[in-house]
Length: 409
Ligand code: BYC
Ligand code: FE
Ligand code: FE
Image 1 (cartoon, protein in one colour):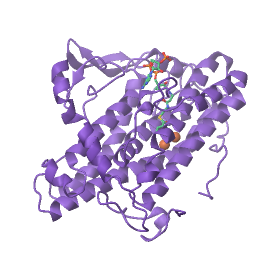
Image 2 (tube, helix red, strand yellow):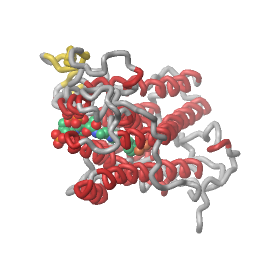
Image 3 (cartoon, helix red, strand yellow):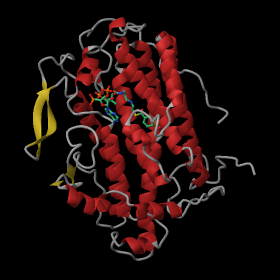
Image 4 (cartoon, rainbow, N blue to C red):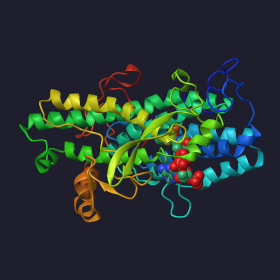
């Protein structure tokens, strides 16, 4: 990608910007790190920075099995941009945090996704991205956590962080586009193949798989996995870390400046989903400690658009099947529901039932093997693997026979 600009890209400085929330509400934004909030800021920048190279580590082997040159080109762009996002966070650490900032930057290079001794910091970033369907799910669901977190950090009173995040957000939109259209194309291809073969029951997995496409129930399982892993990235529903970061003016809410309230939240509440006597209930909590839950709710709303699109493709093809987001209690490692098991519909179940039925809801080894069997690379110009439709439009409106990547032999 010779035309890609490396380096540190910041959104333009907004003149007279003020801190839009928390104890310092209305004060001029900080151009240097405020001493009292230094440790907290550094921690959040390190966590943000840690996810960026992690995703590239997770995706680095996918180039070998790209379903087309178009997809390969998108993968490269996503990876290059995530690499630059790391660069941007490291820049902040080096420029504003002195010696310990430099040490943290070195640690970012030392940790590796999935490494037993020095893993990446957040759970989802140590998972595998074994195939292209996972890649599309990851860019749809996990990059969208990135969007929500970057929006919150873009509100930060620390202006250099705000400006960097505002720039990064412009690139994030494309990553989520790759995910949304990628899943659309997989669903589209499956529906077309079923129709051509005269299959009326989309749950007849064996018959659908025999067509060389991914059956809808397996797509749902992948969705269950990546959505639940991504929900964990919001931290606990009730969190003093989140409250402290907000009070300090370090991390705000999604679209903070557009919210009509006092932006201090000292006296307000927010409904949080909790486990009360074995039931999932909404309970009012102080709004400050409920900020992770609030951001997660905003995220869930943001996720819904894609499902509408995918389901429209399925219904237009005449099939009675709906993809759905699983309940928040399903398959969780962080927060209120980490110690219970629930079905995707939110019914609490015991360990034995979970162990018996897990494979109905999450991708099994067999499912993984089947998907892997489809992952053969397609490198001919304008051609696509059997299991995915061509995109509706090319990158920058390039024609269908455009050579997106030159492969040297
Ligand atoms: N895994 O008060 P709690 C992206 C830890 S994605 C492991 O519940 P808090 C991208 C937590 O660190 C966006 N540990 O939560 C996407 C804390 O540990 P300590 C990344 C976890 O702190 C795709 C303890 O549990 N950016 O950009 O309010 C491709 C209690 O924490 C996890 C950010 O996340 C977990 N899932 O919120 C490329 C923004 N969750 O400190 C890139 C910066 C929690 O007690 N980070 N813990 O040892 C944050 O804002 C917050 O750290 C979190 C957690 C939202 C992640
Ligand atoms: Fe990123
Ligand atoms: Fe991204």
